[in-house]
Image (cartoon, rainbow, N blue to C red; front, side, top):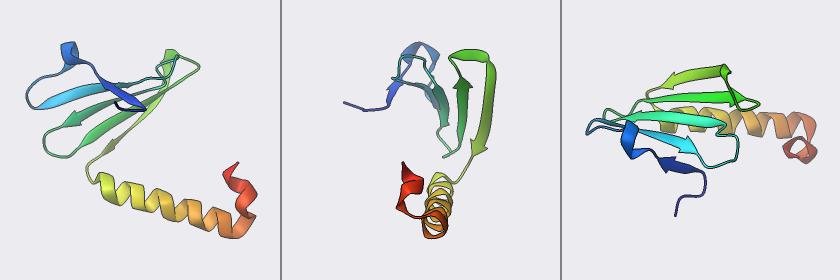
Length: 83
């Protein structure tokens, strides 16, 4: 079982799927395409009119960059930054 996401079969086709977050407010949704690209949307306060989104086509690179920025923040601010 997936901890954070659930595919929405009614909003999916053979070349993409829609996944929604499993939290109560459905904070995230992602369209994941066959070509490796992801359209990730985050909703604020459960409000679908208050959102931001990003289109990512190299997910591994994006994750690596986020991990490096986290590491820089921990170096600068200490382990308490992760709380």
